[in-house]
Length: 530
Image (cartoon, rainbow, N blue to C red; front, side):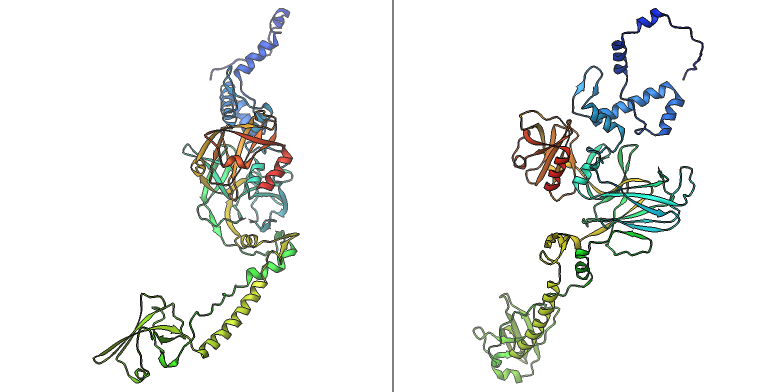
């Protein structure tokens, strides 16, 4: 960098020189032709601003160039100003997106933090309303100088469990790996912060362990941290799936399960389910004259009831009661190709006999088995009647269907270790185009026949926790085989819902009708659909 000489004794500018520069439009054109959008203090750190001031003009120009590149990517596909090659969308929205790497589309509608006040010198557990546990060791919090914080600290926590939560959050759900862009399928995401005397804590001296509740038991997930500096997700570790455990601690801040179902659900979860009994399906013994008992290996004949007797099939074999008194050298039972038929092979010296038979049950054994079966069935039915059903248990004024109860019993937790404040996610990266299959060039038309200008469009598959967001706003990734919900977020800050019947029949280039709603009403509609 060349040396510069500065002086405070500049000669006064003449009136003629001042008049020469009163063409403000010309000056403004020069400025807009050579600069990009100015970064706000929120979008760059204090140290970044100090660096620009300290290093001079050369670095300042480089910084502006970097900002212009990011801004162009963030508004890709919305039109370009050919005079300066800067991509421009709605200026208000573009400035909002520039302010922070995470920008909720509808400010105030995103999931709000829940604040927990804890003693920084005590190890404590926080249990959220959703059942997620945040474990914090004592002396975890440090100030900007690395000194251990003493006194009360406020822990701010919020979690995201469905595509609508993710949409409202504004958190990007795309993962760039080796130049390939993937979409995250989430098994649980949370934002963890801390404040001391009104100031955010920027780092932790110890990991904070978060056991986030989820319903997905797959082992294909990884843990990621969203780096707001690089605006990309950083891989942390393979996701650890834990069984859900009840935790009670004197230092816990717990949100209790609503009493409407707590007393009814807990016994069902903690009491082992009895096995539904079965009655052996054996025919009654026709005649003791042609029946016999035979020892057999239960490991080789698992289908045979241990108390059964064998009855000769008189239509296929002859058998005399006199054979009972014979001490046979060999008695061998083998299954036949015919269902429920067995061959009894008998040998005595040179005498060989094969008899076809089938298993039966005596009246005495039948009476004993029937009583045991009736007693076990009564126990099973009593247990089954005690389980929450659509008529027997509810959450507030909402009765639990069997499917909902099954979901509640399938809850699990995933352990995430958080060393920095910010957003963490248990995710499975998916190649969105391969998952969906169809890339459709889309035009969106409102009820008045006007073309809708979207900032971004979103696709969600029902029952699948992934939010597919197209980088090109005139493109949709669709599948005719999947049950999809599609909407656009417009430059007029409206939500445009695409009619569902249009998502099963379409061409590679398609015009979609959308129903426009203001932001709040649109969120209510999405909540019903999702």
